[in-house]
Image (cartoon, rainbow, N blue to C red; front, side, top):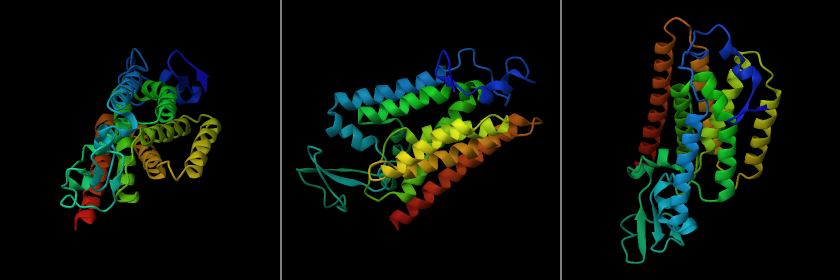
Length: 274
């Protein structure tokens, strides 16, 4: 990894972008960004803005956290947000001292997306944004902005789907880690595709897997696993698409992956509500 004007670069990951490519296009068909890193900075800005809102509205006791975090089932909170009642139904929660916050299975599907941009602890957002700053620009340069943004969002949704299926029904999960692990998987695929040295990437991924395992009591391994699997699948579809009809194949693959994620979410909702 080498320091760049924006983030860091893996030489082997972006080298192909300078070879056998039409002017103005990346190696994988995307428009070559004139300012690599702009989309990454915008995503960092959105995450930072949401964190500031959380801090400004009560930080750890902010009702915004409860609304933005991914909760498979709705939760009954005390009115001041200091506690909750696991398993309490909406009907049981209709008192002056409590409030009910619906979960994904109750129709709050936006939590699958908003949880990707919400953080509470400063170390959490700092680590995630540092990783995004390190990995994002080189993937933007290799894939183009539109494909990079699709990678980030679909990886995050894949992580949310894994959380929805594998986390406790009354848990609350938030953070950009699923999307970040998707970027790690994406860099691994690109580096392998161009024949680059993947040792440093595997070391970095291994360290993060170790941290996830050791901190599994408070770190969402489900989101990390789902994001990584999604990132690998999405990037493989992008970089291994045949040159003939490349864009059409890439779009079709991304749509199919998006549909698979949506079907998994619908299936989990049916399981929780029947």
